[in-house]
Amino acid sequence: MNAPAARGLSPADAAREPGECAIAFEDVVKVFRSRRGDIRALDGINFTVPPSDFVSLVGPSGCGKSTLLRTVAGLEFPSSGRVLLKGEPVRRPPLGLGLVFQRDVLFDWRTVLENVLLPFEMRGADASAHSERARALLTSYGLDGFHDRYPWELSGGMRQRVAICRAVIDHPELVLMDEPFAALDAFTRDDLNLSLQRLWLEHRATAVFVTHNIQEAVFLGNRVVVMGRSPGRIVDIIDVNIPRPRTLAARETPLFIEVCARIRRTFEQMGLMRGDNAGEQP
Amino acid sequence: MTGKRVATFSGLALAFLGIWQLVAGLELVPAFMLPSPLTVMGTFVDAPTTFLKQAGHTARIALTGFAISVFIGVVLAVAITQNRYLEDIIFTLLVSMSSMPKVAIAPLLIIWLGVGAASKIVIAALIGVFALVIELVHGLRSIDQEMLDLGRVLQGNRWRMFAKIRLPHALPSLFAGMKVSVSLCLIGTIVGEFVASQHGLGHMIMVAQGQFDTPSIFVALVMLAMLGTGFFFTIHMIERLVLPWHVSHRTDRHAEVPA
Image (tube, rainbow over the protein chains, first blue to last red):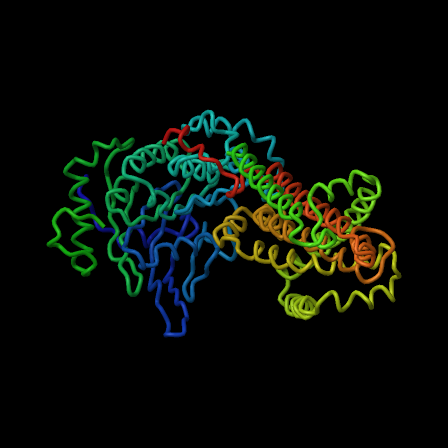
């Protein structure tokens, strides 16, 4: 039961109707045209994400994982193939989407609370009606007493917490995160991984989490999609059958170590990581 | 910090005035060339209302011209950043206009609009608008792509993208442009007053020149400097009130905040 199993285009995956999936990628290819020739950022991407799943996308920089995320957000479109949300092709940024970037992209001119209320204002809703809930969310996310501060008064980890609150305040069905913790130190990152897991267990939104950190991908994901580059493609899909809520100690279990090792070997085989540099993580 | 700066400034000013008084007192140069600071002060004290009235006149015109240049400048900058077509047309016009020395246009404007306030206001606005447009266009353009992406994902329409993201992001640039613009408007006003006028500090300087009344010229110059400095710092203070979040005003409060 606990052995990591490759899924790829497993029968279970292929049998699922596109409409049942929160996200479905069908032969997605993305080519960027540049003066020095075409760059194949994504090639033959096929996989599906069921509703309320948490999928990690892990891969080296330049493997197209951010581009893949942007096609789901409707900010980028495939050169060929389709990206489906609940069976419908993505043509514009979909409703009910929460987005978290590597840089927090907080607005300097708004207080923490005003930043969190931005989603309501942008779609023309009455933001003040939601301020109580926004305050409660901020407080539960360790930002008590900072509601009326400006972003520059916060540390990097706190800023990213605010960005996550902003992404989930409007109860999105789908949350996309593009290396949100990459710029943070290891302690803050661990802390935020735990908070994120707790938040996801409460809300159960469909989540796609992009990272280049193998441990983080395995810790957070129900499934880890491993990507390679030139061209950007899927090289492995692994189920992570570690029970939740996972503690930081879960990272020392044999199963966790085995999954990480398998991903690392995949990268080594592609020549993306040198095996002789013992103990080095990307 | 500020107290120290004021002290330094006062010290330098006093030293400068002292040396000036000394040089003038020794009569190394004739008094009609370089009056002493005390003479200059005496000239002002003899007829303070006359000088203040003229300064008020110049200030009113400069500020009216400034208000017009801010209004037109904002409209032009927004138009430029919203539409490629307008960008080409407006930018070409602005650049060709601003490369024309305003002193050369002033006589024409005086023929068209008369020797009253209107011609000076137009000259001031013409000089002031360019800097404002350049700064604000830069501010509106330099927005982060991720901010716009976020706005689109949050279903913002064109107006909300502008009002809630682009404009507030560009406000520091607007203020930077306004600081440059207000000084230029004062210069424009004086240029207009030099060419033809019946009031104002510029007019006063021209009359005093005809009478070799150097002390009055010095009084007018000091008042111009005070006006310019006053305008600049007024905008600076408004900026601090309106944009408390802006980078250049950040004091190091990080120390208080736990990581």
